Length: 453
Image (cartoon, rainbow, N blue to C red):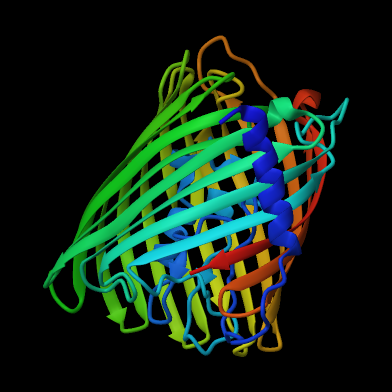
């Protein structure tokens, strides 16, 4: 199919989706908790069951250096999409108005998202800002097996999304991105082996590199958890990821972790954790650290779930050693069935792909508020703030870069019926950096329609 025809089909499909008149029958009590990525964010990450510790959701979203490159996408996702600071999406009872309708109900699932977005600074630059209108079409196919609904026994889930973006003014920016995610676990009595795999191609403006690029990422994780008794458990895990940029330095990292856990009560678990990380940017020496951590999982009552992890990271760098306090923490509070508040904080070391031979300490917080408005609609408001303090890691490298990154986003979602949902969203992002090359100010506003079966 000629490229111009494919581009026209994206615009027609997106426009048709927005103008479609869906029947108002069969209202559903639970609304999708997605923010748009293109139009919606990843649907398989950060699901939290009512009886599950927050740590399982946050350990992926606050994963530290292994996602330091591709996780800092400013575009195309209209939300604060730093994977270390994503909102944990809580999947509660189906009658809960804030429960995620996106939680898979069948072995095979299909969804199609179409929408239009206005972006006033598509390259995330300080000068010569270029605005454009983007039509987005994103079909998703998911396949599931085993205990994929409760995720307590053995299960396997896989989902593939293709996201096409067609720009009204500058057609050279047209893209077709991909995301394949596979996750699950094998469980036998006291032994559990969790695993996941992620392959993606994403185009947009990245916070660390301060510009637009295309990144192809590959990564996976496998672990082993064993419950020695009702009180004691231990486990090992390993993960690897690599990100290949079209214009900037490539990045890869590996992380190994071991833990011993003790269930103080049914509502409180303590863990002693050892972590080893090794990261390398193309053209530079490797950056590694060892960390000793204490991890706490708590669920004091049915309305509050909390997770915290803190310790010291002892880094080995080409320029010399350094020690840093690192932590991750999160709490989800649901005062009523129609309200939810989540807060996250993080301090983690990462490796830079923009300034070869340097790294940075990322300090960030994020606060989200969800409110159901009747049986069909919901609003979600999120604010986040990051400080990225760069340091020289290799000999002969100097850097004094420091970024102050702020983002605010709001989403209004309305369920037209059991299959159709309409969304309207707005986001504002600003990076005030000591390096004028990576400063930017960005506003995005969009609307979309999602069909799910």
